[in-house]
Image (cartoon, rainbow, N blue to C red; front, side):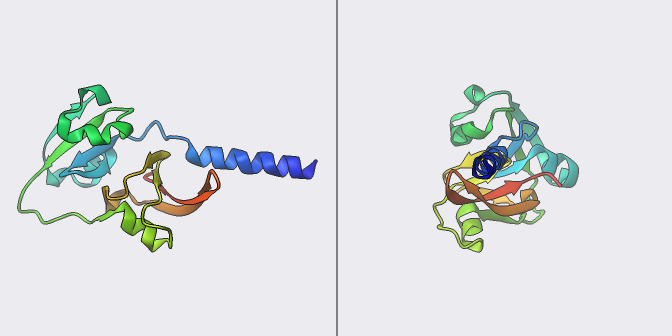
Length: 145
């Protein structure tokens, strides 16, 4: 009976980690993934303009590759020039930092990023840990404090 209960708890916690955080609104600037909260709270001075897409069906061709994270829409930001660059890294580099294979998919607020060549802004890496996702180790990122 204890084994059954333990198995259920383990499965429940794995399912909980893999759930999408529906309050997360992703944003893209210069083909680099961030969040709307990141730009509106911390980086207002960097934003020149923005354009909001309500669904993945509305995304222009250059943003179609981000269709899987557009559940709550997607905002494309244009950044002001001459202000320097923001910290960024590829998901492959993030995997390497946690001693995982470079091509291991990464979870960001429950959204799976299978393409580890994807660049993300360092500001969204609030809480990073390695979790068990369907029997394999995966880096899981939470953008919330």
